[in-house]
Length: 314
Ligand code: NAD
Ligand code: UDP
Image 1 (cartoon, rainbow, N blue to C red):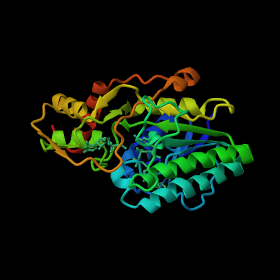
Image 2 (image 1 turned 30 degrees about the vertical axis):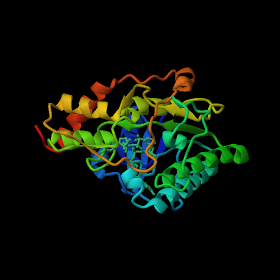
Image 3 (image 1 turned 90 degrees about the vertical axis):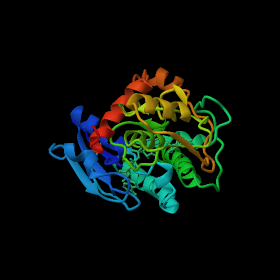
Image 4 (image 1 turned 135 degrees about the horizontal axis):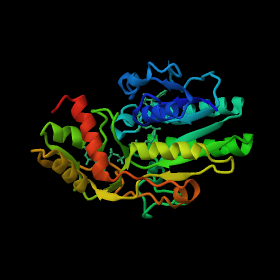
C-alpha cells in the first residue's frame, strides 16, 4: 500500500538517496529541509515526480503534516559543518527531535531516528557493539553533535516508555557516496575532490586513525528494512560496513584509483578525533538480515565518477 512518508533532512546526502528509494518502492514522500547543508541539486531529479513534495522548513519549529511514517535525518553531519554553529547543532538534535516525536505521537506513527557512531565517542572497545556506552568528551568541540544525538536517543526511548511511541533507532557509521557536497569537509569527499584536482591530500594526524566506510545504497537498504520491522524492534542497531581502513590507506586508495599526482600532506589531528571506529553489526545481520555489499574500492569508484561529473573533470 502506498504510504505517505516524511523525510527530514531529505535534501542532504543520505536523505536524497532515501527519498529516491522510498519513491521507487511506490511511496509518496514529503521532504522537509532548511537547506543548511543540503541542496536542491540533490533532489532535482525527483521534483518532476508527482508523489514527491518539498517543504522548506527548520524542524526546530513545529511542523503540522499528515503522514504515515517519519525518518528523522535533519542535522548537519560533517564535523566542519556541525561545529560551525554548535548551538544550532544541539538545537536541531534535541528540539528538532522533540518536534518530530510530537508529530509522531499525535499521528500514532512509526518514527526512525538516524543516530550515529559518534555516541561512542573515542571508543575504548573495538569493534563497537550497541551495548557499549561510549567515551564522549562532554565539553569538546564534537560534543554539540555527540551529546545532541545522545540526548535524542534518550528522548526517543522516553517517548516510547511514556507514550508508547513506535520508535526505531539506528546508529550510522561513516557513510559515503554520490550527493555528498564537494565542500562537505568529510574525509571521503575531501580526498576525492583533492585528488581529482591534483591538489595536496590533507591527512589529519599521522593517518593511522581508522574508520569503516559504508556505501550509501547499502545504508538506505538497511534503513528501510529497519522501518519495516515489527513494533517490538526498537534498536539501537548499528549500521555500517565493518571493513576497517586507516585514513592513510583511504588516501592511497583514492590516489591509485584516480591515478592522481596529488601528494599527501599531514596536519594536526582535530580535538577529540576518534582513534578507531568499526561497527559490530551482528544485530543488524540477525534482526534485519542486513549485510553491506559494496566493497570500498567499488564504492569509491562510483563516488569518483560522481565528483568528476559535478566538478566537470574528465
Ligand atoms: P547532510 O548534512 O548531507 O544532511 C543533513 C540534512 O539536514 C541537510 O539537507 C540539511 O540541510 C538538513 N538540515 C539541517 N538542519 C536542519 C533543520 N534545522 N531543519 C531542517 N533540515 C535541516 O548529512 P548526512 O550525511 O546526509 O546525514 C543525515 C543524517 O544521518 C544526520 O542526522 C546525521 O547525523 C546522520 N548520520 C550520518 C552519517 C554519515 O556518515 N553520513 C553518520 C552518522 C549519522
Ligand atoms: N580527515 C582527514 N583529512 C580530511 C578530513 C578528515 O585526515 O581532509 C580525518 C579525520 O581527522 C578523521 C577521519 O578522517 O580522523 C574521518 O573524518 P570525517 O570528518 O570524515 O568523519 P568523522 O568520522 O571524524 O566524523
